[in-house]
Length: 356
Image (cartoon, rainbow, N blue to C red; front, side):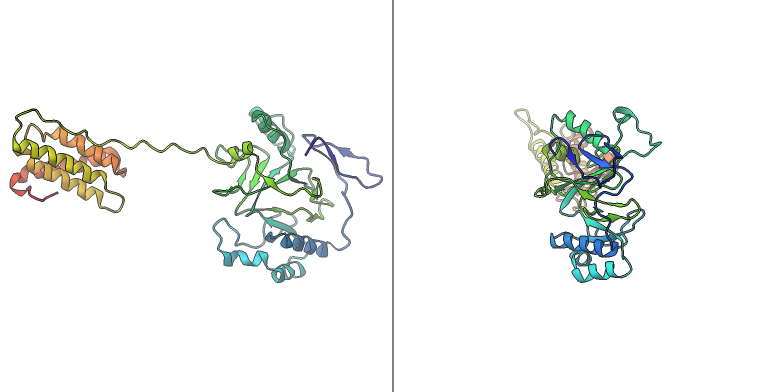
């Protein structure tokens, strides 16, 4: 929103106070707008309004606003979700056992930033110690990013908080987060994020306990907008750099005049390193590592200056790291290599043909 936007108070209401950040004026302690003459009928109308907009809805408790139907989690199947988009089911809920229930709006195609008001006695430390609400926290994040307040579909809640509606971004969808944690999409204290697998109380839903509805305060033609780049960056974890793959053992060079056995030993070592390096999960890597070490142990006596214990261990450890053998770490891989090497030495060259 640009500047301040006024929510018109009923005649005779003068107790108008400003929430934490001067984005909107709200009326504290008094109804805003008309009180529905038939709350059940009003809630049903709100549910159908959002249904016509292509959004799923779920009945929610009037006190704690908890969803009273399940099946809309992030991994929900189309069959599980179908009831939340079915007009007949919506009628059955709000005409039957869920009369007057809050209208919960499934946020599968939306990301809603829920800015709460600070409750008395709530302890917040650090840079947010003096904030009065989530709007203050978002304001701090906005200024740190050198950005402007996001202009999008905006709703003031009965308690004076605010919901900012955005579209789900392309790529991996944004999920849900509550409060201040170090992992995205958490943003900070007094801010909840509701994306795929979540819901918010829909704009228009009436709170009988607070005597007011969730009220849109953005322009009538304003629709949910794409997430600003700075906000999306905060909601998505930074891409982790791909781990550097260890390099296999370097090719060995032989001095002029090397023997045929020495050349064969070098070729055997390099062949084994190539084969172990190319293994993947499910290829019985530990067993093949053992077999390779045993084979080289069997060949060791044919070229003892090439196939030393140290050279074989270094070469096979490098190959094990390249193919991703992490179970048990380097210590486990080294134990496998040494076991195979020892067995191969005991067996000698007579067992070496084709053993790897």
